[in-house]
Image (cartoon, rainbow, N blue to C red):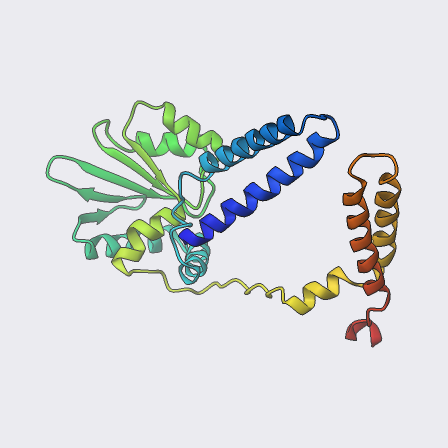
Length: 261
């Protein structure tokens, strides 16, 4: 995981620096200035990505097999009845050694001096009215917890404005914090179709299909013509040459089996 982050950082830095350097070279003649500004742009872009990805979601902490299982579990929770979900959560919390009971709409976890009311809303996308209804169904000193597949920005913002102990957990967080530790999951009755993987052969077929020939030639000609009127024409010549090569490969590409039939 750490090696992947380092490689992503290096690849992103190199690409951003090269693109910034090439574009700035068209407008600035001072090489030192171009280099420094390109470095600053690279630094700012990396800072943006750092703050964007600083908070790891619960989904990111799961491996690929668990992520696929999470999708199946989330779909099942959407289809099954609320009572089935309440029974599932009660079983999970009991395995986690919690003092728990259920009503028709919520799960109640009792502690020594407080209570937690959990409202599962997997069957719908929670609205502001749903949050208000959940809060009204609890006392002020009781913590309100809402489980749902996801929450809209409007609902999340509204919940933060309330001076009440309210927590909202997505299906990924419920999976990681409750179902997975308790090893309790719903019976998967509704499944999604697995996505067909994009193979290298299929990617090659799409990239070098005969229908791409005209596009490659047109773009190559435009870039080649541009090389006569701008600085650093060598880069345009390289790119146009690569595109002309792609066009030749597409021209001599064999049709797929479906096209032959």
